[in-house]
Amino acid sequence: MKLKYIPLILLFLLSPFLNSCVSNTDFDQINLDVEPILNFPLVYFELDQLDFLDDTGTIEIQSVADISDLEVFNSSTVRDNLTRVDLFFELTNQFDRVFEVEVDFLDANDNITFSFEDISIGTLTNSVQVRQNILITENPQILNTTQIRVIVNLLPSGVVLDPGVERRFKFESVGIFYLVF
Image (cartoon, rainbow, N blue to C red; front, side, top):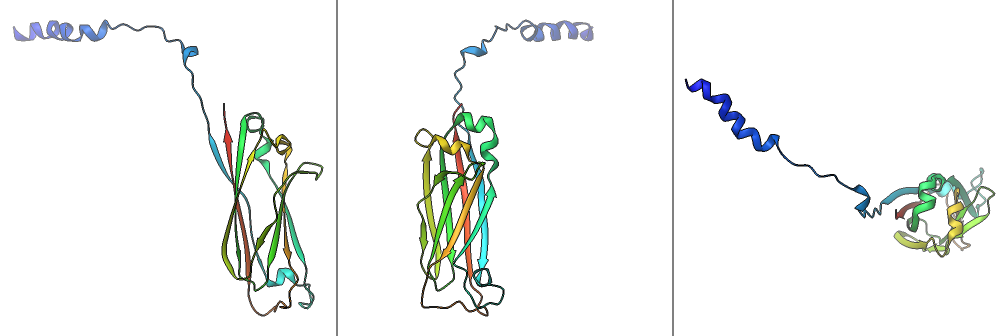
């Protein structure tokens, strides 16, 4: 006899869940501000003393340049919504010589879209950190960037590079891209 009432009791207990109300949701009323932040490594390289000497190891080369593709601006989503770019550079100089570094953003025709102030790094410097902020409203031409050029200049000195003494120059850069939708 007890088994006869169990389905009835279950129906009574579950009835509030079976009879619930659902109202229509209007998603157009939601004001959702999305502000993603994208971190991209830009350029990294290490140079040694042989990079600043010719093949014979006797004549100094005054500058070493590198151009790398920068594909972050290829995206229309980035170009249409980018508000600011923060660039971080970290340089290490194990040479007993002073270096000066030039960093330029270039468009597809190698025209400069943005040029950074030259970075000077003294002799035997463990770490120099430089931060550059770029507001897109003040520098809209940066959105046409397709490449980044880095030129490392070895400044004249009375100290001659020795091909037998290992020295390193390290360059690292990261870009933080701020978007608003």
